[in-house]
Image 1 (cartoon, helix red, strand yellow):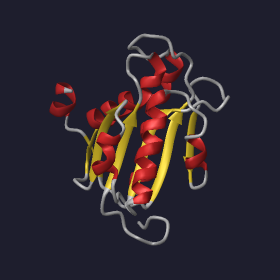
Image 2 (image 1 turned 60 degrees about the vertical axis):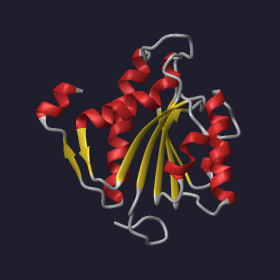
Image 3 (image 1 turned 135 degrees about the vertical axis):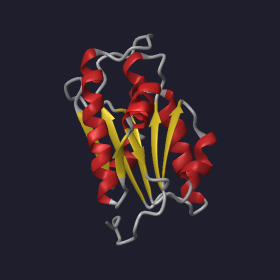
Length: 175
């Protein structure tokens, strides 16, 4: 299936960002862990736990046909709400800071634009956090949202023609 503008996805990056030491702020890395645990993805898909990295991600994000960013998103909705941002909503996401890594990702996106290496399409799939306190466990509301985030990622990957298979039982048990 084509991306916006008719191009077929050749390279997709699923990037989970956030600080896993700050409860719900770490939802992005929790989601990419779960995605890798539950599914075998096409080799065209690069799944990255970006944590709180920024410029280190420049090369991985450059010229992606589709970039899916998984993150905590403060939208004023109830905790655990899943939010999808695309098109003009993506730049606005980086203007309201939930955490310091958003500044870093905004800088990476700006650098990619300056070098004409911006992703063809960028979508943010986020979860409204319940807590940003120190701690490594997600709140109950956000933990319950992780499967819905994964479902949305799968929808977006299938939309661009990515083949997705359930992980083998042996691989899932090792994760």
